[in-house]
Length: 275
Length: 234
Image (cartoon, rainbow over all chains, first blue to last red; front, side, top):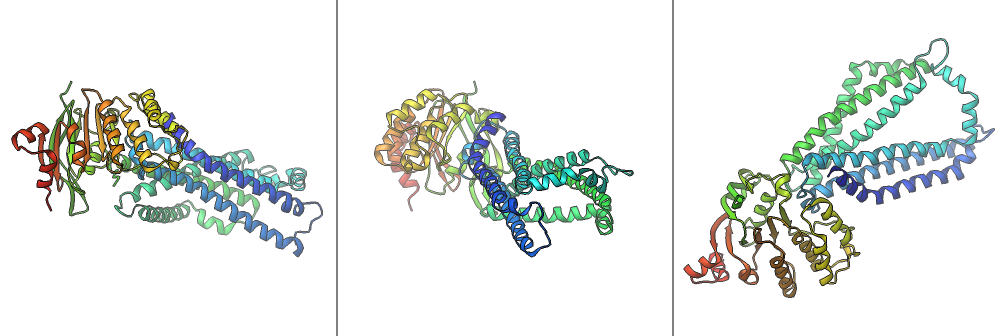
């Protein structure tokens, strides 16, 4: 049954999410052809106003576009969860011979699959836009120097580059799943507010996010990360700081998921009220 | 086999602190009957059906289906037709058949396809282009194409024209086994009186009458429709 639930969830979301990702990648290809392909080339003086302004404009546009599309992806995942479980579609979903746990697991897996695809697409998008032949050549030619400066090689290596990369990928995956669970938890808690379920879900989202931010700040202070950010003096320190931040971030996302998942399960099992 | 298919014990459902949709309701239904759940709007019919389906959590009391609390086992033996359209507008009719085939072991796709063909409903049509009446017919066909033990039909004839009503009632009668029980809610008594074995009158969430149609006719010398009008006179 779990496989069937996932199949139908993916089928319902695929249409919108494929369109969003095709749009995102197409926009990036166009940016690369018409913008970065011309900007990131040999002999460009980035201090020159002629290049500086388009660069700032481009990065602003790029960040806005990527953020909007990432938000759209999360919205599609959240709307699917809400519509399928708590709107009129819920009358069918909740009367299937399937446990609440299976419903939640299916939604979490299908939502996470797309959240992870989104993270991967985001990195591919950056690659398409930024990795012009000139940038690639510059990195390849100066690879040893860069690795040495960042402390991955040399006399006092502070850690492995591949280790950091693996850690970064792991944290991205945990973060993607954690975000999905955060949206689901907000919607599930919103269902407890009879008559104002969507408003309740939005309020729950802001409450959880605020609590999570405060908790993350406290955790950063406890682990010494908050003070450390003020004292970074070299690239090696920055990499060490980045590694520690990733560990704290990943752990925090994991903890948030572990706390919220049972809450959603409990609401779905004990507090379903389709008015 | 347990002769009682549905049992409610002191069942209550409150919305907020004051509004009581179902109030300390106790009743039991045997297998092999068509039961009319009758009452005016707001009498608690839909709430009771949702409680039986596990779509609402009771404030107090219990509901047992074939001796079990609402759960996976009970959902596999209940076939439910809600008042609302519950199929996604982007879904095609044939997708809905695949969906039911995937999730319900007792679903008979051949029966559903035959009924859809009888009604000239295109299985490649999406729900968003079907008329309200056609949507209701498709949902009823899906629900009645299951070999369930308990059919819960919430206002199956509420929003359709008289010709469609006749078809719906015929579909219900032709597609349930003798051991199955049908509980259908409506306030259109005249149309369904002849198919009912038993009626339950609900008022303010309480059962004010639970009797067979024959008992009403023999003892009270009235039709169910006339009795209904007397009980619920404004």
